[in-house]
Image 1 (cartoon, rainbow, N blue to C red):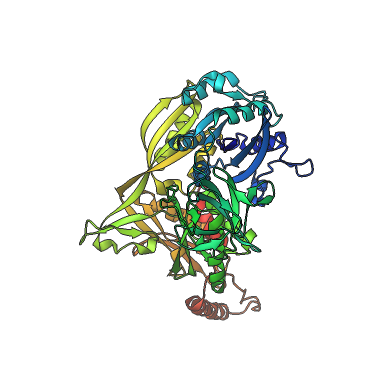
Image 2 (cartoon, rainbow, N blue to C red):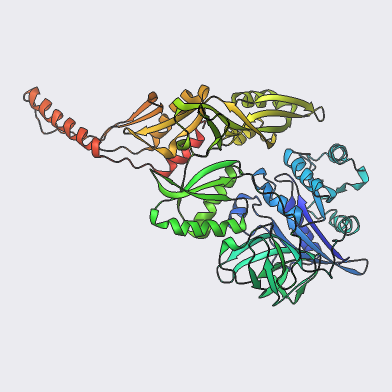
Length: 598
């Protein structure tokens, strides 16, 4: 056990985590020349296309240090704030972390938030200064920043370049000398933490675990403590580039388990695996439950696919435990699910994965957050409002509270003005402004969560030319003046497009929604009025004009009354058509409402 090291790599987006993982695999000889490729651990098509890590990936390496063999279990983690739950799970299975900082971009918001996650779990931190070979790198300055942040010595920071392979030997030596070996008792009953799982259509659910105490052997009768169900360990093994089956996985090691479970909901991330005959008494205190930040409805295009969508979502939840969903129904779209996501990118990725991995074409409704409403009769008991249609009648309502967050934005001093005006436009209140260095400023705002779920992050990147980094934490509910804006098409409310908005923004957004829908809804044989309304009051209107046949084309000259008669006849037909006509809303219309500022 003393020769096992479990560690993860944490960093902000694009600071070189996956490339560093590639170099470590090359250096330890864990991959052959044939298997080598860029970002080897990013094995999902989506990850390779977008150049981002979405899932944390575990892999085992063997390394000989001073003539002694070591087993290194590496977990490469995502850097985007929307996938921070993946990072928290990886950290729970490790004793140490490589904190990678880009020598050209210095410390950014996600670097700091991942670092705090690691420190809360008492991980040993090894700071790595990456990309020192770049012409724009500032190694001395960034080293000073890291020393200020961690309180370590400048000599502890390892300069490296994951691209060229500089400093890889030093990183491996530091992993072995600085990161402690796993603690645990091999003689106690089996106790293992599930930190990830995937669904294999041929073999059922594959569970990834880390043994805390005891050991797990092939064929052992085991039990999952959260669900209370027991199984036989058909196969256990370690996670090399391909899975390699083993007879036994000992204390402190990381491996995979196949038990032939077909039901996705029987495996819970954070659960404890133990021996069925002599179970352990205490469960591992797993990691915290996920806090979804954005809520949206996901509906199948064809209502008959509802059950298929349910099983697809359950399989996806195995692989991405931060996806939360429950059934709901909508008057316009039929049966679907109310889903919680960690951000807009997360929502986009889930939608893409449903289409690619499970062939499910889905409709996504306008994202929103959860509010609490209080009625005049009962001012103490909150009514949870997940959907604008859950809002009680305004006449009997006392107040609505919405979730607020503390946002921390780190940016260059040149962009403080534009960033501040963006935050104030989004109803933010500045609470603090500190200069980390003469060039870098940290701004703290209290803001409503609803304002950042749409396009805030994209716009922040635009106003700061990509230099601002953003992180946030919930700080509770506050009363706010909110109104429900409905969209009416041809006089019928489309509940999938309803939104709860602040009173000051309602007119603006209502008008923009109508204009956007006018562009996207195809013309019919009759006029389609598009209206935005607060209660019974219409606040904006646009009309999609009818396609008209030229009924007067056959009249050559002659009396005007003949033409008028034909036009009147057409007008009556159009009116009748409008009463029975249905308006199809294309999927782009639902998504376009999110991008109102484009």
